[in-house]
Length: 186
Image (cartoon, rainbow, N blue to C red; front, side, top):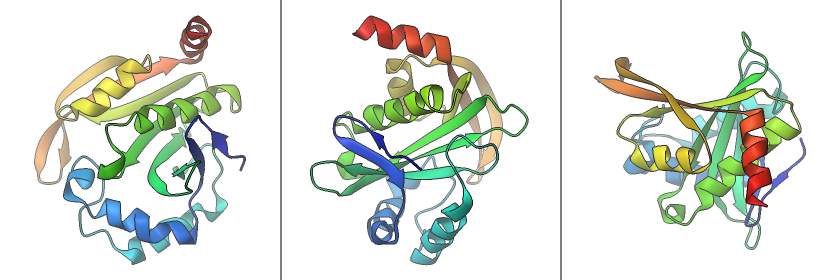
């Protein structure tokens, strides 16, 4: 898979040498709060995920693709992005982002998601990119809205998650909207 380059980051498949840092930030309770795993995330969990990634490709329908977000200057893993092209809607991709606490608040999430979304539209010809967000995850809402995603739905107590009913927001952006926004920014 071709790497995705942004100003400060390289998005690329996770590697075995990334796993200690990957596990460290996934064990952070605040990082895990709105994610599908919990703070007991282990090296074995990470090794399983890495093995499952061997046969998946960005832009291909089916499995989630996990990409490490690595600093271009220092090669350090700062987080990861994920994407899944929907089997039932092969021109629609769902995305996600996780950043180590030490990397949050620096614009790296926006940069990583922006790079991933651009690649999905430009290289893989997606029509629509979407994201699901817990209603309480305000930083993610701001990130997505800053990038031009719109909130299309707020599903009240629609998901049983980590022992409680949670409200979800669905965000999306279309390829032509993304392209217009990028053209206007130049």
